[in-house]
Length: 507
Image (cartoon, rainbow, N blue to C red):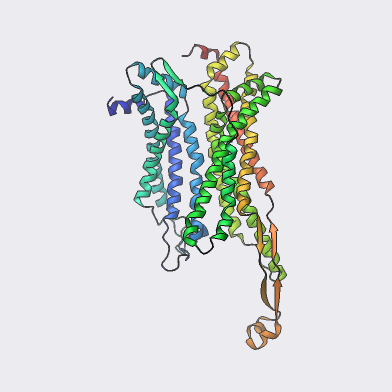
C-alpha cells in the first residue's frame, strides 16, 4: 500500500472519526503548550556571578528566583498528565465504527500490518497537527504577551526561547508517543475480514498488588529527608538522588492508585452483586466485574490531579503553620511582623494548576463515559426491547460511575496527602537570640547610648506538627465528585439516543 493511500484512508471516516481526530489534536495542542511553557521557564538564563542571583527582569518571584523555577516547571509538566490521559480517552471515541471500517479494509485485501499502520498513522497525524498548531499558538502568544511594565519587567518569560532541540523533542516527540501508544493498545487486537476481535479478558479480578507500588512511592518520599541528612555536604550526589526519589515516588504512587482503581471497581461490583436488590445496581455490578479496568482508564487523569492536589494541600498546611510560628516568635521578641504572603501566594498558583487539571480531567471523563454508552448502544437497545425501563438504565450508568469513583477519590487524596506529609510533617525552629533596643530611634542609633537600652531576648526551640488540611481536602473531594456527577449527567443525555430500538438493526 502506497503512503498516499495510507494517508487518504487515515483521513477517511464518519463524523465520529472526525471528532476523534479533532479532540486528539486539541489534546496534543494543550500538551504542547504545557511542555513548551515548562521548557521556557527552564531556559531562563542565570545572571553572571552567583548561581543564586535573581533575574530582576521578571515581576513574579517564581521566575526571578532560580531555586523556584524547577518547581514551577514541574507543575507545568504535571498539567501534561491529564491532557495526555484526555488524548488517550479521545483515541477510543467511536472505536466500534472504526473497527468495522478496518475490517472492511481487510476485506478489500489489506494485510494486518497495513491496517495496524493505518490506525497508528491516524493517531500520529492528529497529534502532529495538534503539536504544530500548539507551536504556532506558543510563538504568537509569546509576541502578544511581551508587555514590559514601566520598570521594564515582564510578567512572563517572553524574552527567552527553549533550544531548538527541546522544541523539536516536544513537537515531534508527542506524536511519536501517541503513535507508539496506539500500536501498544492494538497488540491484543486481531483484525480479520470478518470483524475485529480482542483477546478475552481474564475471568478473575485484579489482585491487590497495586498497593506495592503505592508503598514504593511513599517509601521514596519518606527517604528524601534521611538521605538529605546522611549525605549532607555531598551536593553532587544529592543533586541527582533527591530528584530521582521524587520522580520515582510520584510515578509509582500515581500508577499504583490508577491500577488500584481496577481492584476497587471489581470489588465494588462484587459487593453490589451480593447485597443489591434493585435491577439498576445489579446491572452496574455485572458491568463492573466484567470490565474492572474501565475505571482505571476512565478516572486516570482525575486521580493523577487529585494526588497532586493532595500533596499541594499538605504543602500549603506546612507553609501556613510555618508562617504562624514565625509570627508567634516575632511577638515574643516584641516585633510586630505581618505574615509573609510569598509562599502562600505561590500555593495559590499551584491550586489554580490543580483546578485546571481537574477541569481537563472532567473533559476526559465525559469523553470516556459517552464513548462507553455509544459503544454498548446495541446492548442497551436490546435491554429496552425486553422491557427494561430507560430510567433503570440511567440509574445503572450512575451506579457504574459513582461506585468506584468515591473510594478511588478518597484513595487518591489520601496518597497525595501522605506523600506531602512525608516531607512536611512538622515545623521546627532552633534556639535564637535577638537584640531589642527599648528607646527612641535617636538613642538606639547612637553607639554611645544604644548599649544601656539594649536587651537580649532568647526564643526557645519549638516543634509543631503540621495539621492535616481536612478542609481543603474536602473541597478537592467535593469538586472531583461534582465532576463525576456532571459527567454522568452529560452521559445520560446520550443514553436516550443510544437506546432507540433502531440500534438493533445497525451493523
